[in-house]
Image (cartoon, rainbow, N blue to C red; front, top):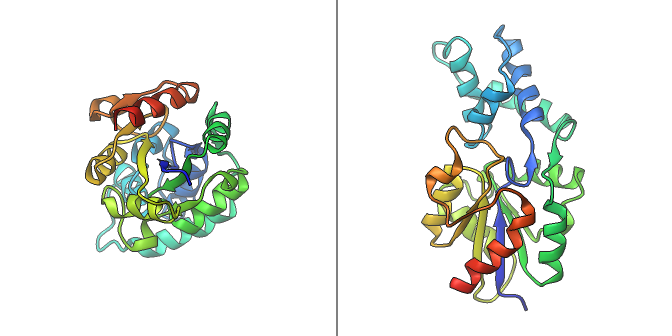
Length: 224
């Protein structure tokens, strides 16, 4: 039974989802007569769930409407995004080879994300990634979101392992804080979505490409 676990963030870590998140956000903004947000903007706005993405998009395109209720726009976003979830999203280079190696070596693998659990599973299915992961936990799984450590711990728990040791891989301050709150080491990737370079948030290791991840993961477990 493996005792080593690697838990990955999803958006900006496993998959470049910005193109499809941008289209879904702009679908909602267009319905409100707002301008479209750019790819550069969406890469900064992503990370705290769709509601935050929408409110940031509105704030950047004219401000929040009086008495704004995000829920109708959120429903419109989720419906559009669900129907177009992998039109432009792509797996980051080197990821599949890393997952194959980790799985072959007996690591338990999971996903802890601030994307809804159902949408996360749908995206992973669409990109043929679900077969690698024994758990997928979103903010709706327990009713709390990262950086609360409970979703991370649930992702670990659902792997059904005995006294596992864990490492997190993520692209943002939210992921670094989640790992810190859970008391586990974290690897930062620089190709995701964050207003500042992820290394400024103090991950235990930084990698430039997933080709470097296996050695970094092994180093962190060796230090545990």
